[in-house]
Image 1 (spheres, rainbow, N blue to C red):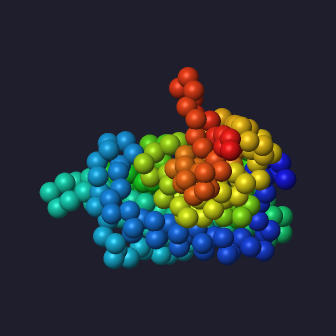
Image 2 (cartoon, rainbow, N blue to C red):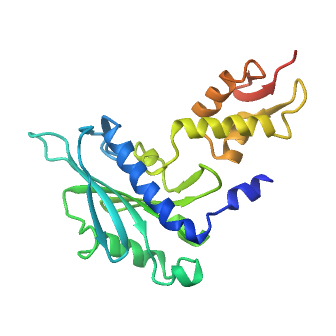
Length: 244
């Protein structure tokens, strides 16, 4: 399987409900285990009670899991984190998301959705079981007092989160650190450019090709029993098949 095949894999439509529930449950778990989260604009920190119970409710566009956080009794800062399992009217028939992206984002923010309030910043991840059209992916961005992420399922344990980098982005990626490390280990073991002693590949291109973070790649290298190592050359990192 080529990297392009890997990146284009999407789950069968019949699995949409399962992956949607996984998305909501993993979001709930990640928020409650975070201890604290950082506002993506002001860098203000919000403490999270590990026993906090998320609000779970349904709207016309799908199911919602939501946490409403405050910075403290004496502070007015408010941050709402929400994960949405999107449902579209025509999905069952077509297996595709239909309608303009703006329509869905306006529904989410509107009075019949999450009803965005002034004085609160919203960070919202939206999972579509049908995936996201290319032209929609640029819609995952900051808008007014909100930051949107679009999420879709890939092959195996891999998910893709479209949207700007922020301290909150990982909350909307359901893949666990352990799952990501296992995926990194498999990618190293089967990579066609890491076969012979001395073979090497730039770290950045490996991470991009397999949608991994450096932490997971380094953990996989450390558990390889010396089979792989990291080399630094002129400010760049390379993964090398060890020379024995």
